[in-house]
Image (tube, rainbow, N blue to C red; front, top):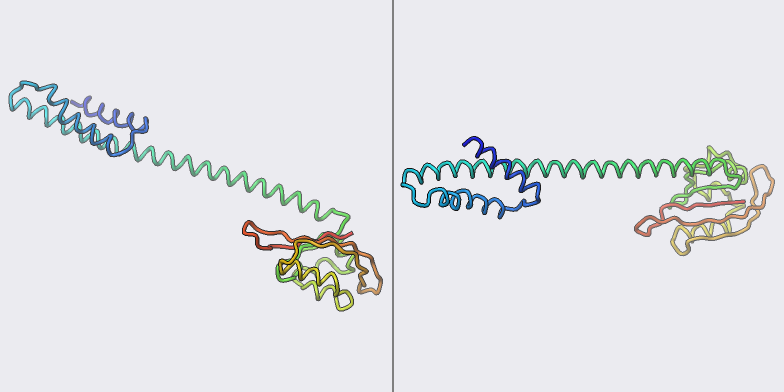
Length: 213
């Protein structure tokens, strides 16, 4: 009897492993155990023999149901852990790629001989590299967080700022112009500026990127 009980649990686990996981697998198996097998064992037996076999069959069926439930739960937990591990691994890979991408960008940004700057959707500077700061004649450290209009000053607000407003409003995605820029020390430098709008997955402008030579 003990072997039969253990065997019913193993059978249930085999069914789950074979992907028979719906309620039909349980209901049909219980019917076979409690009806078909009992009839096979006791086709002409006495009432007492029939009752004894039927009682054993009920216990076996109960063990089968318990084994099926346990195996189903373990399978679900295993699949959950596998899914979480895969998601975590993908997230780690994405983070590594993001960090590498950021590292490459920072290396290009900092070491570029051309001026590079980023501006948020309100017209405030996010970041500039040393080459851009040198072209504008301003310390790089004092530029982030301040508006482009404030940094350019009245003498330089003109076509560049008008084009910048067009970018911010979404009327255009990029522009290029050459302008004579009056720096704070009184010197004038010629700047060839290209500026583009970067959009997020929803099509909204998230940042403006400027490159100047």
